[in-house]
Length: 171
Image (cartoon, rainbow, N blue to C red; front, side, top):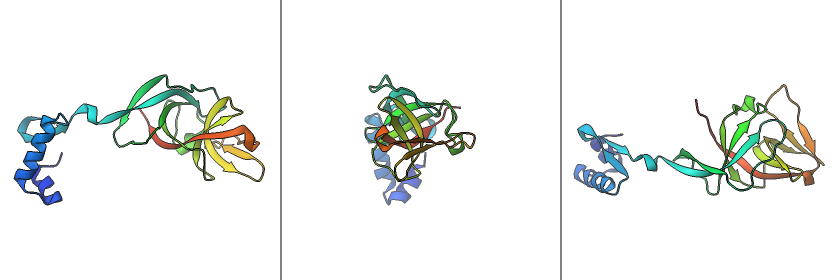
């Protein structure tokens, strides 16, 4: 946390103005005053909840839940309207540093640019995370794993439901 002097200098406020703002933020519960005049952001304002829709395959497509089955807390900086969270299973995206067990935050979008990482529903039934490419008469779902091969589908068999927005990894 910056000092009161650093905050005052950064925003061009007086020390008393900064002190008054910190006092009000503490009274409203956004900040917690610690020892020696330090402040800490209240825990509930460090994260927000995203609907968790189950696992997503980084390999062969698998079924996913249409409705959320739970909620997960994600860091505050991961703001994304209507985003959903999925947990990755498999290693087809490992060369893009998306590993088995990671959580991905998906922004709902149906359009895409070649090479983007998307969650796609295949054959109205199963979902996968892959890089997507539109070819003349086929959609390519390409893994980021040189040991695996792309999957090709007719355009009507693939529906993009979202683009990768954030990756969350627990160690």
